[in-house]
Length: 250
Image 1: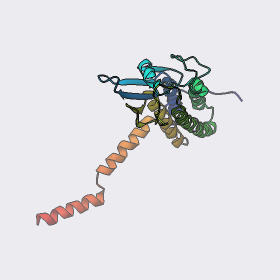
Image 2 (image 1 turned 90 degrees about the horizontal axis):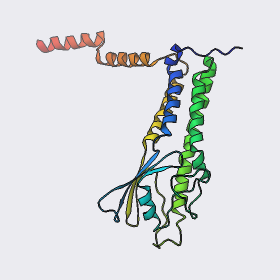
Image 3 (image 1 turned 180 degrees about the vertical axis):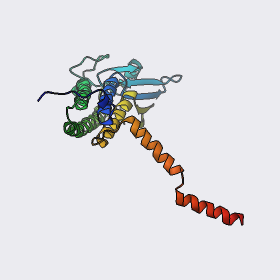
């Protein structure tokens, strides 16, 4: 059977256009921070330090200053093993080889979304949307769980030869506030993480409309129609309102 690519008009359908858009967002997310940390330290009373971490082994912001602070309690940036990051990993650092594979996960999910979007038949498209959504949720759920585990491991593997002793093990959260010694940090998701969430949301919408040829235009028209129907009283309601008005006037 000869493969017939979908026409450009078919990509206006939510079930085809949204997976393609999600693929573009996932590739873009790789270029942006996935995780951001704001640090308040007594050693820097007049400034707030910032760290941005990416899906590949790269840290931007005040990572040099933070490395100086962290060494006093024996907390080191992870070693990605297979990828030389923009800092020098310490011998005592926790090895996180999967960080080097992060870009492959994003690209794999993005490519699979692009392939789903060009499925030759509706049946294959619907089946592809199901696998795509399930696979994407699985991949990113595993990634988040792995990151949180590595944060736990790093915070519970403090260097015993660090200058400051007596620091209790801790687990930096993906989101929230935590305090270690005289350092207070606030963790937040980065722009790349939010783009990833939007991409997953688009895949959910595409799967929901997998059996429909609805487009963004028809979707917006339907929303406007529902809003208009909700605001416009029915004939019976209007008659009842007119009756109430007549009784009131008498």
